[in-house]
Length: 182
Image (cartoon, rainbow, N blue to C red; front, side):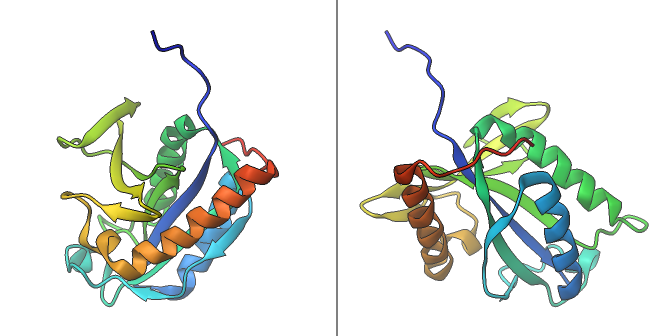
């Protein structure tokens, strides 16, 4: 018999992209109001694997990945996704957003993204939100799965998340992670 127990706290992350580079900095500050301080920001990247968002958001699209210092229980992902949806909604003019925000988390075993879209590999959490198993950690490295978005499967992006996980694991081992309330 398996007995329920509390999960290890996770490190929340987010992907942001927009055609307005400076606007992303404003949104990162808003995310800090929700999740606490950011402890890592990726180099500026181009979101160029698809032009799916170009009609809505313009082109070129600039991307940043971020991670947050404070750890939290993984079930807070649902609330975080609703809050990031609210931030996106605040930027809508007509039917066009200025920014896309994809929250998720890193745990010792995996990288999960939150989505409102169901699919075969996504597990329903609650309140209309699904967990997308995006990367798994095995043999010392994150690995993509057959359904992993091409940008997250890119070796350079995987290496960024390997570094985020390495720092996260050090925090877990030291027991120095503060909890955030989302």
